[in-house]
Structure formats: C-alpha cells, structure tokens
Length: 402
Image 1 (spheres, rainbow, N blue to C red):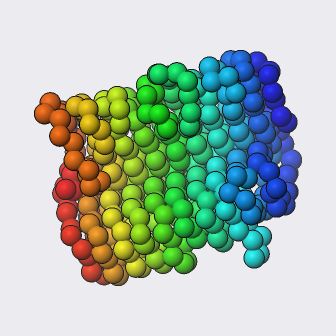
Image 2: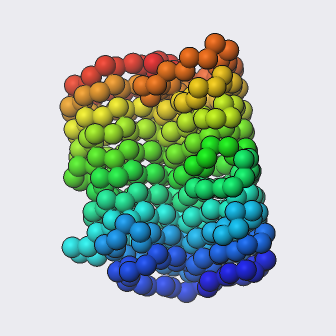
C-alpha cells in the first residue's frame, strides 16, 4: 500500500506470505502493510500488526535506487518539511529475509527493519515498536550503505528547514535474531532495536527510553569489508544529543561480528551502542542502562581503528562547543572477546566505553564528562578475552579504554 496525504492508519494487520524478486530501476519501498508514506500533513500509524512472512530477492545497478523494507512501514517522506509522524504500538511477528540473487549485487542504500524500514519525518514520535521475528539480510556484494535493525532500520532526518526538531522513541523491543551476511565497501549499520538513529543537521532533541533487546545480533563477512561498521545490541549508529534511559540488552542479545578482512575504516561494536557521536547541542546522558550479553569481535585480518565496549563501542564528543556528558548507573555484565590474527591501527576496549576519541580534539575549556555509579561486573565467563593478538596501539580499561 502507498499512503499519500492520509492522516491516520490504525488497527490494520497482514498475514500470509510475500515472495518477490526485484531488479530495481527506481526507488523501492516494500512492506506487508504500508510500503510508503509521502505527506504534507501530520501522520499516525497505530496498532498495526504484521504476520506476513516476506522473502525478497533484490538487486540494483544505480546508486539512486534505494531499498526500504519494513514489516509495517517501508518508507516515509516529509515533502513539506514540517510534518509530525506518530508510530504507536506497532508489531512485527513474521520473519523477513532479503537476499541478492546469484551473481547480483546492490549499489544503493538498503534500509531494513522488522517494523519500520526508513522513517524521515521532521518530528518523529515512536511509542511502542515491537519485533518478535528473525530479520535476515544475505547480500553477496554491495557498494551501498547497509542498515538493518530488529525493530527499525533508520530513523533519520537528512534535511530540514527547521532549526530544531524532535525525535522521541519509547517502549521499543526486539526478541528476534538479526543476522546480516554481507560483503561491502560502504558503511554497515546493524542492531537489535534501531540500526541508525540520527539527523544530518544535528539539531534534534532526542529522547530514547525503555529499549529492550533480547535477540542475537550477528554480522558475517567472508571477503574484505572496507567501509565503516557500527554494531550495537540496542542501537548501531547514533548521532547527536540524546537523553537515554532504561536501555537494556539482555543476556540472549549477544553481539557477534565474524569478518574475514576489515580494512580502511573504523569498526565499532557495543552492547548498547556501537557508535554515539555527540554534536552541536553537545549534551548527552544515559541513566539506568545495562548490557548482559557477550560481545565478540572476530576479525581474521583487520587494518582499521577498533572500538569495543560493554555498553558503548565509541562515545565521541565531536563538537567545538563545550559538552556535558553524563553516564549514571550504566552497567556491563557481559564478557568481551577479541580474536584478531593481524591488526594495525588503534584498538580501544572498555567495560563500559571502548573509545572516546576519533582523532579530533575538543578545545573547549568547560567540558564536563561524568561517570557515576557505573559497574563492570562479571564471573568466570564474563571477562575480557584476547586471542591471536597481533595488535597495533592497544588501550584496555575496566570502565573506559583510552
């Protein structure tokens, strides 16, 4: 269904099976319920459920032909640059599998989520977004960005005429396994709940509360991947100021990367966030959050920066403004395993935060970084394990790596 200029869709459901092969010659938005929403007025999708299994075979030859796939909503666009989007109590209960055909590949961006594929309204409110099914992407070759999340692929605003806007996400759960098998030369974003949560203008006020992931998150590659990689139990790639509360990655939400070769760009993996960059608004807080799952990074050959954290892979205040970052009662109970046979570049490992720098330095004189009541706790099975270690510069900390 394409739903343009329609104010509300509620209490809808889908069941059955969808099998589709698509060699894209245009942007492709796919869903069992709502393929795309393009609107100039405020919009609500509420109490919708997908029980329809989706098996999709996709390929593209033009970088403009993006794919957006979600169980309930594939894609949204705000053509007026003023629209509020509300997504309330929506659920996906059916497996979604995407693959490239034999000999085929992707050259365009690919966004995929169990409930929401790509959400791009100026003001976005998500309250109740639940995925219970396995989400799988098998991409033999791609030069486009890969974004795969259990609950949502990308919640992202690329352009806006407003100077400030809102992203508010609450009550997000994923219990399905998220598995991505990909060989890529571009960025990879993978997570249990939201793979990508950010805005391009960096002026959003973001509130992120009550996220729970209990599904295993796995990224596999059997050839060289040369783009940036962001993996998180809860959120893969986050950009901008955020107030985070009650983000939980349970013990079954293991985060595992197995890659034959990782070259050129950074690799970030964490129990909560793979990567969180704090920009213009310069404020970030995380309260009452924990990771209980094992974090494993298995890179047969790696020539890149490598940040691994029990909670945050990289937490990076990339701003010229004075920043204020607070972590309060953020705990890690999971073990961290690194298995690298060869390594060049910095490796930063921390029980709570793996790395806190990406090369640039903040010169403001009133920066505040507080870590309070944070514990890295483990038994004999929940420790740091480093094997086959031929590493470059190496920083390890029980709480923070560098």
